[in-house]
Length: 227
Length: 99
Image 1 (cartoon, rainbow over the protein chains, first blue to last red):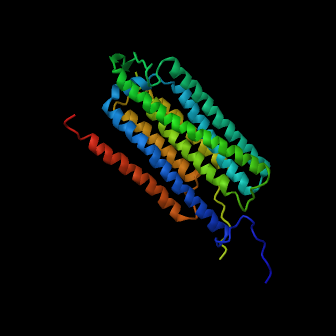
Image 2 (cartoon, rainbow over the protein chains, first blue to last red):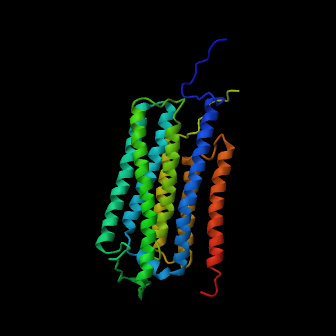
Image 3 (tube, rainbow over the protein chains, first blue to last red):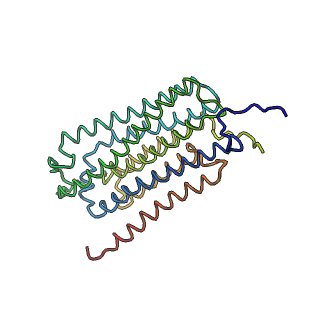
């Protein structure tokens, strides 16, 4: 019997490359579900406290920069597009295009983190970081009516702000590291049209981190902004 | 046994169009936040966010057209359990009349 051209990336316990790919994708999705539950806990805490202390949450939210937040949302959406184009380039076997999109993705991820860093710096300067030096003297602007808020409740908002955006930023840092490694491996020619599962799965991770930000942006930045 | 090689990806123009759609969604979210819709402000914001997230899951994460149907079940179950977490927690906190 003539020996068929064997895909070197195909492990022997899988029937074919498609089955191996499906198994990897399913495993990745199971991991992403645990991530959804992980962030879900924080979203739940956010909802409960926002409903209990709405004025303080609105006052805290009004201290954040919508424009930096919206810019970061756009940066993440564009990075999701470059990720999906990287997967497409990998499928087509275009090595240099693949490396290019991976590098652009890392750069966009870093852009996001730098903007986030400037936002954090402003929080430190205004003493809006929860802890011993926390100060909050701002009021909730409810259609021009200034309502004073309890600083303790505002501190709760900023605790959740730092917990959620900080955990999200940590995921971004991990994602940037992941895509940097993939870019090097792709440059060395590790990925072929027959095997590019790591690119696809890292892409799934990146998109999930993007989705989490899509929810964080309106929930944290856009509370009661109309006047 | 060997099934046909499946191309799960779409054209480059399609992805860019989806990206532009998501950017328009972001602009709409920001715009809607400045309009006084009363209690519907957060509803609109979360509705747009959910539409954007669904688009990302279906087209960027290739759940639509995935050859493995089990993937779809895992995705739906993930969001289903999130819904249980949020709805049952709020069913408790929102009905505590003694607070």
